[in-house]
Each structure stands twice: as structure tokens, then as C-alpha cells.
View 1: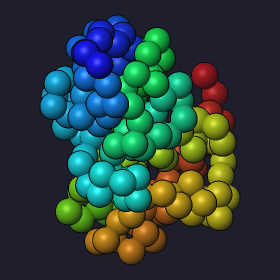
View 2: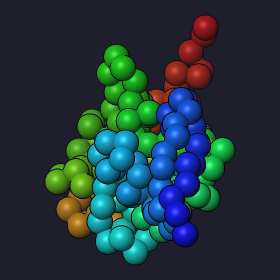
View 3: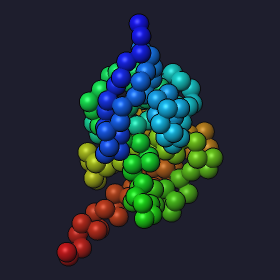
View 4: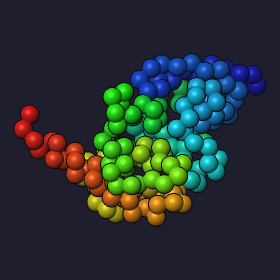
Length: 163
């Protein structure tokens, strides 16, 4: 089979890529489009370092053929990061020391954004469950969980402030 053109929305802008069949979204994002926050870890869907959002849902991009996202919205850490600073989740990760080597951090932040987007006030267990597919070998998870709890509290207090 020959290559074909796939179109999808990446970080709010439409992109077209020429790919061979079964090329992964991870390969396209990193090597064709230069989105290096999408890490290449296990290449088997077991570590979560390649996590992106597809239509707002966390997906392991190393397992996902790019053809499967044709016409869909894909979000990476690059699109989450505002031009003028850090997103509230990124800020919470910084404040809680929720990273060491940083390799897993983009996937963890993407999962956190999805969780808080669906559930602005998750319980500790819901946070733990959300990270079931993401491995961190450095932090021991406690700072990561604290960061998500902190981001949720910051959002709640911001929402409660008079407009």
C-alpha cells in the first residue's frame, strides 16, 4: 500500500501529513511535526510518556495509527502551554515538585488536564486511577497527586472569586 494524506486538527490548527499505512501518531507528531513533548518511551502503550488528547480523551500515541485521528482534534502539551506562562496544571506541578527527570511529565500533565476537564474536583482515588497508564520512575507519585489536587483547589478558588 502506498502513502496517503491524513488531515487532523493539532492544537487548534488543521495539519496535513503524508504517511505510510500504520504510522503511529507519535511518530508523526515527533518526527514529522516536531512536537517533542510527545515522548518515545516504551513504544508499547505501557508508560504513558506519549500521551496526547484525542477529542479531549487521553490516548497513547505510540499505539494509535495516525489514520485513526483523521478529522479529529489532537492536543499535545505544546497546545496546553499558554504563550504567556504556564497553565494552572503546569504551575501546580512546578509548585509541588511533581517532576524530577521530566520524561513522564508531559504525559502526566496531559492526563491531568483531561481529568480536570471532565471532573474539576476529583477525589484522590480518581486522580490515582487517572494515572493508571502513566509510569513515573522518579517522583514516587505523591508530588504528582498533590499537584493535581492543588490545581483542582486553585480552579475552585478562582471560580469562587467574585467576577
